[in-house]
Image (cartoon, rainbow, N blue to C red; front, side, top):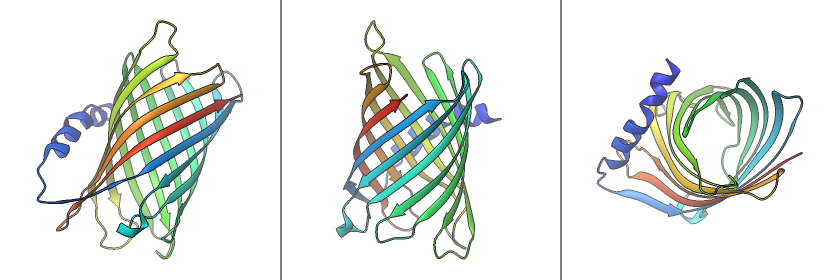
Length: 220
């Protein structure tokens, strides 16, 4: 079932991104994504990932910062299960706590991921939001030594239960990205990614963001 959902992500994403809109609310952002992780044994690891997303408050998009602690378990050569807890600060807005569960897999150059999020937003009376995020991507080496690689992916944000009564449900956003990664050493990897994120709005212009993102991953 999961893989049937994932296999439809790319086709649905292309259709949604190609669907004409009468107007859109577009803005430029900058994302920074440092993370640090370590192995507990051959199949188990922990990771602290963070993100700083700098936006323009003048158009109603506040800066966002999150801290996410992952526990990852490799269950096969190409499959990993993971769970995480996250605290998200929205500058001047409602902060969030999230719990996340995901399965990720590789099939040669093809990469799949299916994530479920439980979301708790401040001032929502403890109401839990529920969202699924299927992602489909491609990744391939650019150099013989494998240090350089490139990738692209499309990810749907499928809201099953809104954090507020009467809030939007269904497919509410699409994130597409393309980027390159470089393994500086066995412990350090750098990445540069260009992201386009489109939030689908009812009876309003779609909210679209364009963001270069710098990733810094350190393991020990």
